[in-house]
Image: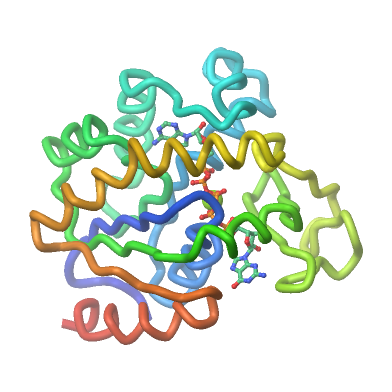
Length: 218
Ligand code: G5P
Ligand code: MG
């Protein structure tokens, strides 16, 4: 399905490793959204050792949030590049200050909130492998790469994220509780947020399509 008539501005929210990237890939394939992942973009800057990459590296490695002013400036510029397309934003906003700033420049239409138990999340991150240039993500036992340690499409090396170490994961979950949960309330009061609960992405996925199909087909 391609989105033609209206430009949809969509967010996907959820705790670290709740499956935002996994579900986003499916949404891109089914509906043709432009996927804008703040985390993937920052990791790309770190990999390329840009000025921004050098500035944010320690925040990502330790599982801390990049300061709001840096993040807002960066994402506003990124969103300009997909201005005339339907986009799906993943990883931003993460604080109420970011949500406020985004609302002022682009009120969003749809907010999808993934609700996955924390014990499931902690188990998952141990088995996560990523292909940095594309953001493709694997999980041993869920979507295992065809060759261990290699990306299915390019054959390039996969890495484990530094912030998937247990102490960084703990920090990320704590920050999520304190800083990002209020963002859920921000969108709830605007009446545009929908929760999707489940222990697996396969359980959540049909609930999301059932919700989006009637909205996006209008
Ligand atoms: P990110 O990159 O936004 P997080 O922590 O929000 O990082 P993450 O870790 O990228 O989120 P995800 O995208 O929600 O997780 O989940 P995923 O990658 O799809 O799935 C997680 C794993 O589970 C994968 O291995 C996947 O294959 C597997 N999986 C999925 N579904 C299933 C399933 O059903 N079963 C099983 N067994 N496995 C499954 O942000 C990173 C950092 O960037 C900075 C911060 O430092 C942040 O910590 N940052 C920001 N800082 C400030 N403000 C912002 N707006 C920022 N954005 C990024
Ligand atoms: Mg992600």
